[in-house]
Length: 73
Image (cartoon, rainbow, N blue to C red; front, side):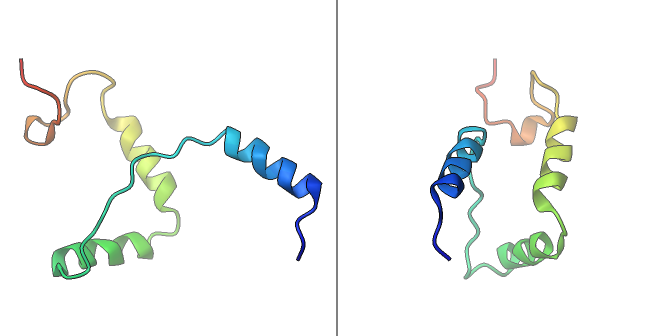
């Protein structure tokens, strides 16, 4: 199907409203990683699930010090 100018304009409007987050990388030679990939693929809407979990994380500070990527004070 050939994309019309209206389709291309709609694509641009959509793209201008989307922020791409950092991606998560998994190793195909790591069985534990592949198990996680299988769990993600089994979810009907991983993006919605992730947004819900992120909404639970406090806006400031670190939810768990063991996974905090910020420098400790």
